[in-house]
Amino acid sequence: DAGVTQSPTHLIKTRGQQVTLRCSPKSGHDTVSWYQQALGQEPQFIFQYYEEEERQRGNFPDRFSGHQFPNYSSELNVNALLLGDSALYLCASSVRTGKYQETQYFGPGTRLLVL
Amino acid sequence: AQSVTQPDIHITVSEGASLELRCNYSYGATPYLFWYVQSPGQGLQLLLKYFSGDTLVQGIKGFEAEFKRSQSSFNLRKPSVHWSDAAEYFCAVGGRGSYIPTFGRGTSLIVHP
Image (cartoon, rainbow over all chains, first blue to last red; front, top):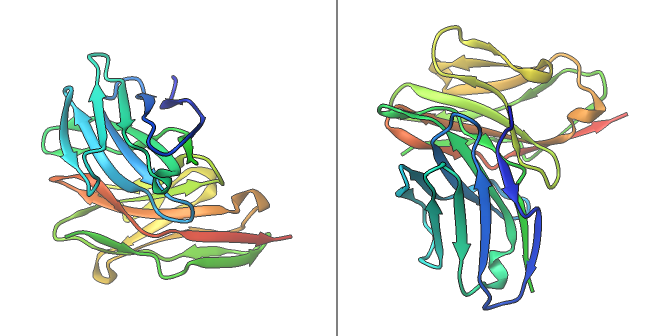
């Protein structure tokens, strides 16, 4: 059973560019959440996708957008990159059952460096 | 609002010694509690979780945690630490109606040979 996968593993961009990160959830999971983790910090919630819609959003600007596909995989897009966007981007998948969320399982992350 | 406090930024132990990492939470209802471990540059791996039932939870890699409602705590323990346990440990809280877990700031575990 494959776990959560993310691509690419590493990425280098320059300021002002745009980037797309990809995530495939664990088999049987229908919900994908994205987190940004700066060096030495805890993960910060960006947004969550369920049924191809953004369901919840953290305190991130509109430069951060996403998409979920019918097969539950997801993309995170960041426009107009800033130096401060350099971080490890984590994808987590889970199952949404009724009124609560099951356990989140994380992928290995994508390390983004903005120069 | 839910929150998690991990009072210890760094913990240093000798290999073979016992370990306890502290976690205190604030949540308005019955919490769901998690411990994750993260090796440098890697994703988070779930060690264990508490949803309900027995307050002593067994996890992977020989870890356990005890939920104490009266103390709002969910401390992580291991009887004998191995050098490979050196990593960052995150406690998180969620619950019914809360789709997003809140993470503590993490505790860095250093293991001396």
